[in-house]
Structure formats: structure tokens, C-alpha cells
Length: 345
Image (cartoon, rainbow, N blue to C red; front, side, top):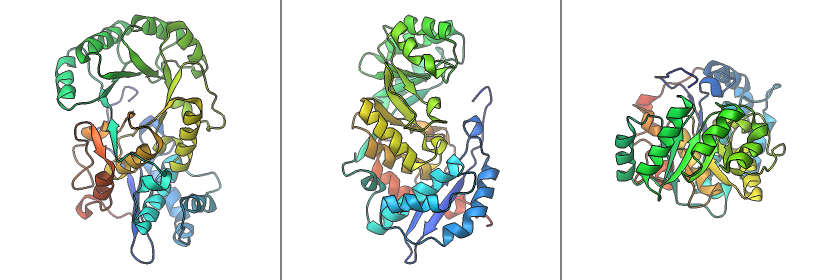
């Protein structure tokens, strides 16, 4: 990320319980340059809010549970990762109390399984081996990171990937705001015939994305543009194909659902994406994805592959590029005691 390699992932797990022993887990996992807060700052804010949180009365509905978070909001507002962990922990507690899946609290109709997209971060040299694996595991959608090497090499990678993957696999791209308009236009025109579903944030300046679409015909998705705006501030734009929602970064469950409602109104996809959370966080994201997207959407929940160890046994995983939402939720309901350490409050 931004030229740095990370080999360790730190986070907090929150366990909320009621008087009769029901519990709900949530994850607080700020990560690298995606968050303004560090894990230490999130923990410090949690300690300040601890007493108010433990004195809350049980909420019998999801709306009431979300309102509880507002009651305890610190003077400068919740850090996004902490609010995310609290909201998912509360919704998981309520679901446990009601004997339901969290997804059923978010929507009357939800998917029992969700697809995940594969994430490719390699080069043309590793492409053949990557494609062989993806075909064996039946991924319907592949996302390629671009903007990390020369423009020429990125164009070559995308064209070879499309040729190797064939026509049946959806191809997405993610540029992480790498290029200026001229570079993005050159790239877009060079891959215009590769049947790209969309490219995430190709430009450093998001206000030029509609012009990029008009110049290249390549649809785009908002990702980083959502970090510092609300759904009310967002405008539908020519060429907008998807919103990439990272609840850990944008501030939790409630705001994620607001963005999903915006996406539904403007006819674009909602893609739920992770920031290398543990099984606890990924199971929550799978429930959200199951509730706010259609059955054909593939989500960015494949990051579990990068984790050498996890806090749950068995860990979160896909089978043939699908997540069984109930199985993932049940596995994450009880993190392994030997794999977590208590935080002194």
C-alpha cells in the first residue's frame, strides 16, 4: 500500500453481551493510510466511551440499536473503524437475541450465498499461474490492480488477462487514484475493447470521472471518493457503474446502507469490500453484502487469503468463489480464546 509492504494486521474485537448471555462480536481494524486513526487511538476512544456503552439498555430493533451509538458519540465524533465495530457488534447481538441472521435485520430479502471476486496484484509473468488457479476455483469475477507499474505494462497486463480469462469472467480494474486525466485517457482507450465492467477511481481528481467516461467509454466506480462524503452529498454521474463500500473506512453499518440506497436509486451496483479484516469482520461484511446487493454481484471479500492465521476456527473462506452467509456467521460467533488477548479497560 502506497509503496509499503505490511506483514502484520492489528485490530480490536468487541464483544457485547446482554443479561441472559447473548453476545455479538464486532471488529475495529484501522489500516495503513486508509484511516486517519491508529489502533491505539481507536482503543483510547473506546476506553473513554466504555462506561456509557456498558450502561445502555437493550435495543429491540435495528434502528434502536443504531440510535444507541448516537447516544454515546464522543465530542469529536466516532472514529470510523470504532463506529463500524460497535454497529456490527450491536446488530450481531440483536440477531443472536432474535435467533436470526444479521442479514435478515438489514433486509426482508437477502441472499443465502454471496460471490467474491478474486484480486490479482501480480504481473504478466505470474498471470498464467493466477488464471489457472482462478479457473479451478470458479471465480466469476476478477479484479486487477493497475497503476503500480508503467502505463505500458498495465495495458499489457489487462489485455493479456482478458485474453487468458476468456469472455465468461467479468473483469474489473482498480487504479487507486493513480493517474492524471491524460494518463487515464490513454489507458482507457488502450483497453476499451477488453470488456471491462468498470475501473475504480482512475483519476486523482474525482470530479473529472464523467469526462473520463465520455472520452473512453469505460465505466467507473467510486471508492476513495466515498471516504469523506455522505450519501446526501454524492451525485449520480454519467458512467457511474458501482459504489465500492468499505464499512471500516466510511464509518460502519448505517452509513453503508445509506450509500446502498443511493446506488439503488441511480441504478448502479453496490460492492462490499474489506480492508483485510479477520473472520469476525468478514462475516459481518458477508451479511451486509447478502442484504444490499443482487445475487450476481461479486464482493471484495477474498482478502482472507492473505492471512496466515486468523482468530476463528474454522476461518472465513469461500468455496468455489461463494460464501455461505450462515456458515460464515456461525463460525465467527465464537473467536478462539487462544487466538485473542483481553484488552485492559
